[in-house]
Image (cartoon, rainbow, N blue to C red; front, side):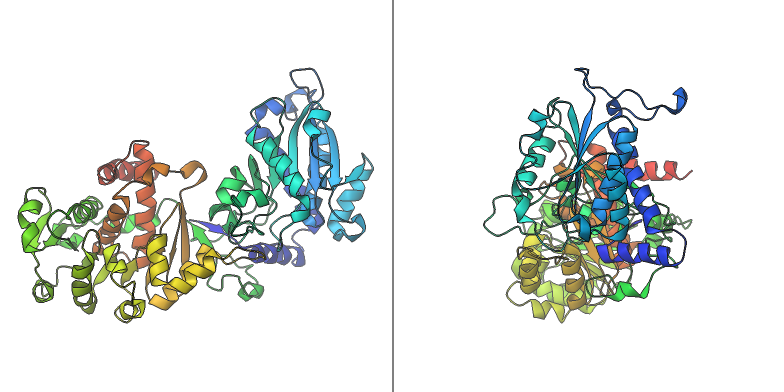
Length: 566
């Protein structure tokens, strides 16, 4: 797992390193600028880079018309602007023509940014950045192939509406960056206008057609030390383009994504994460827990999934197939009498148990070998209201999805009274809003100030209220425990899997988690591992995916995990 930081956490880490004498602010700014330049040349090798083989001399940076390549660097009033001045100087040293604009008063720049501003003045000029300076710039300055957005970084707490035409121009450039007459747009640390803690664009109002109208949309974003939460939530991945994280020498993160020994006490400040960093999921280490040497099906758990009536059993069968494929030793479907024949005709390795009503479920649950339950997929609201209380009263590990959640839309408190710490709730956005209407409303409020309330905040608040793990689905799936432990399974950037938006994929995810609970993983581990494998199965299959394909991709994905670790 890799950690995701808030703006406050990143500032605290930098400040701790500076106060320890490990590094100076100027050194960090220089490393940041160097990281941006290196990332630019790696992303677009055709732009050229220092030719060390030729004695360290820069190449002659000319475009196809023979003109010298030009960059425009837009600097802001804080340390992000200071990074921009470093980028401008380093590009100039590479032989580029560089023009620099500053938004704000140079006299008010922070000390380190001011030093780099003055260093640039020894090379070139700095023009004031206003809402009219950049419009038409590419046409009037032939050879401009690069625009660097260093206006606002992770510390932005308000919209900047007074640069709306600058935003429009850069967004047009980034959208048309494949054309020879349009520059590529690079954002330093985070696209200007994006809240680093929520992935929302500050100033996006309810009447705006597109939240990206209030931001700069980049082709490439270069962040430092660690990705920020806002890079992977909400609109963050859309606005950031490709995301690169540059090492600026602040040390390594401790195992598990938590902050290391330098974690300062200021991380308990409002809107920071008291229980450590959020983590972005990578290949799950928990999979090693499942490679048992006890090769006997009863040692691998028994999942029990409840289906709906005749004609409505498909979702539960999908979930059950997922639970079996992911490693549960046995999986049984509990079906009502009118669906027995239908289910019996559709299953082979899965088992079938008649469950007509609450009393029948109580009788079935006398078998202690049934150690993980799944209720909801295709279950029907009435059947869910009858059986969910019985299932939860058994205190077994359980996944509640779909109808098991919607059945309590008119009285969420009644469900919360039943829940316990071994439960995982897996709502999509609509189900989440029905169970947690006030939290969902807060999340949906247009963010005018930062740090904005985020999907991470919302999921954590929901988990604390429910007293169990909550997995809030989406491309930026967030998984939180009542104690604040949190992970983001981001299917964005290179992990994007848009074909997961297909009927039944969520049912398979519920089955994956159920199977992992049956194998003995904790609710948080099971939710994290299931969510990660769910995306990997979709990526392994590719476009054209339907839900039935997901369980069948698991063997391939799991083999690749084993091979990668040898």
